[in-house]
Image (tube, rainbow, N blue to C red; front, side):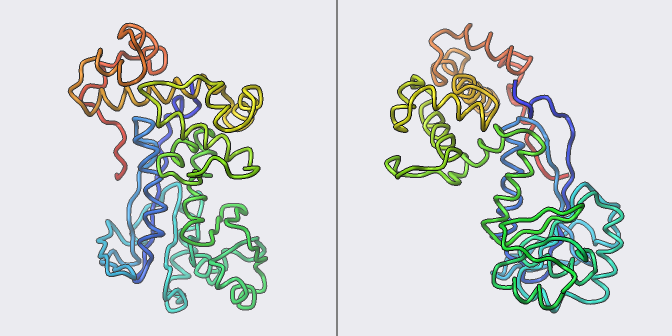
Length: 319
């Protein structure tokens, strides 16, 4: 059983938006959390949208968002994600700095997403810390805030502050948090759901070991009804079965067989939740010739038979 299946902690995430925020960055932040909930079949994360006053904010592309509450009225949560994106210099006011300093006492961790590091630095929250920002602003951040040690990394964690470089790195950061909270398997599955880092051409030369694991899981996800043999997966990746098993143990803590079985059972649970298929039909669609074999494996994996999940969707996200 994967680590994420044992975790019952619900982590609360608040996203502080400003006018002209990047909705691309927002989607790359929230969608992986939503996917983690859906894949786990339970609520692992909840999220809310905030603005400074609780008033509506509008993205750089004109998308309006009505926040649930203003930052100063909020009681805090596990994470506060600060997302100004464009016009961040105009948002770096004394009022915002005071509100962020107050928020630092109510949130376990603060995340400066995209150009959010600038507002955290302006509030003095990054003094003496390592940080990064959108790569267009790296030099400016270092010049404006000499007490901040600026790095070019995709994201940087230092104490209770995390900073991130931009839109695609936001996705990487959230995957990293999912991995930290719930283990590598859930993080890899979320990445695979969005085809993140998956190569279309498996003939690429000398891919990274972690990329080979992603490629293998991508093959598994595409072949649920007619499961491939593990040697066949290894052959398609042009590595030995032994090498594939070593990579899976290193990056997921499980064998390829175990991961493949979990993927098939995950699909069985999704079908039980969202379709009207019989257990026999679900078994066939998930590579089980015998419905009783599916039921036994399902019971071991989830502690309940497939019928328990009929009409039950536990992967909702917002509070």
